[in-house]
Image 1: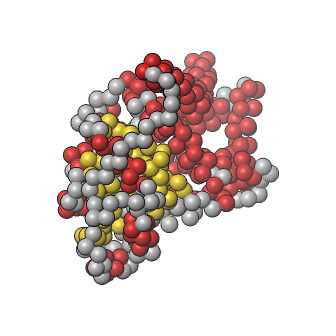
Image 2: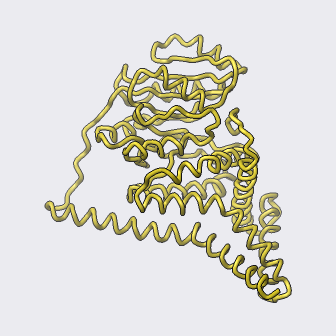
Image 3: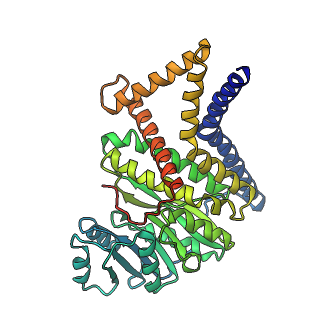
Length: 392
């Protein structure tokens, strides 16, 4: 019995330490590395001469193919086209390739009626998934620089310029942009907080050369960095940057390459999206581990991604082990504290709790971890899914 009590205690404190490392200690360590990298860069500039304004980089505006996989996007696609028209990019150097993936809402008919020569469309009669749609779009794209975005995304006038400027360096293979979500009052205090935290991590990782993934709604890549995607690929915005790294290219993150996006209208829509992301992540994790990476990037992969994917296991482990040790006062208190926090979070999600903002943030955190756990279980079932829907 003493052995099982010791094992349960080890499980509790190990799970708590893993959670603290994932959400607190890793960002703190990352900030130390980021600060050191900034100081080192400043020192090198001082050695070269007096500090002054950085010279503006030369404009680099190669021809670009913007590729969009669209399923039932009649309400959002015209807005994307209008945002592309307003881009500050040389006329005639942008084409839009839209793949209608079995749309049944008029998307295909709207595309067929477009007279603009810079808009090209592929109309697939049956829905086969985003990965297949991207394969089809890249196959007909005319240009070597590709930009992937979504029909619901709105590019700003400078977005394409900011992405393209990095490719004058021949070793840059993928550049990830920044999505700025147009939150409503409620999502600003939940998903908005999480997204700000995530963007800060990405900024610090980029400074250390450890950018891992893109936001699927905004990133650019060289055509040679695009692999033929398997139909079952659900996280192409992770698979493609890792493929570029295998080819020896750099992956960058540019927070000045901004586009606007709208979050899921409901928590249920965000839950479904994150469940699919978790499924795709667990399916390809073995492949990602085999990708040759430098030490810092592999540390970021394990800390930022793998440990976070396991966070629901750590949360469940803390609760179960503290319940198993109920007879000890400290663990009984810890178990009651966890149960109380969970009930408070649920009440906050329903708008019933005092301190509603913090309670809603905790509710969102728990819901997203539940989505991760559900996605992991579905991935273990090995059921292949390729159809996709934009979160409503």
